Length: 81
Image (tube, rainbow, N blue to C red):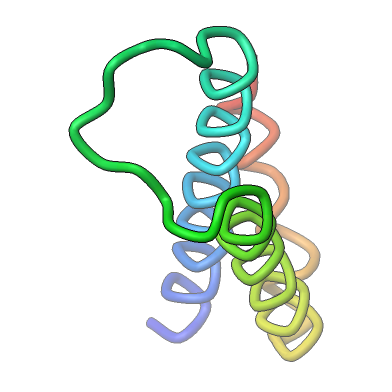
C-alpha cells in the first residue's frame, strides 16, 4: 500500500506542475482574457504559485522510497503527450 501511495504522489505532482505550466501559458498567450480569479501580487504571486509546488515536489520525491523513485516516473511518462 505504501508503494502505491508513493506512486500516486508522483502522479499528483505531475498534475500539480502541469496546472502551473498551463497557468503561465494562458497568462502569456491571452493576457486580456477576462478571468473570475486573479493571483494577487502580480509576477511575484505568479512566481510563488509556480515555484512553491516545484520545491515541494522535489522534497517529496527525494524523500520517497527507492521503489517510488524507480517506478514513479513510469506512469508520469506514459501519461505525457
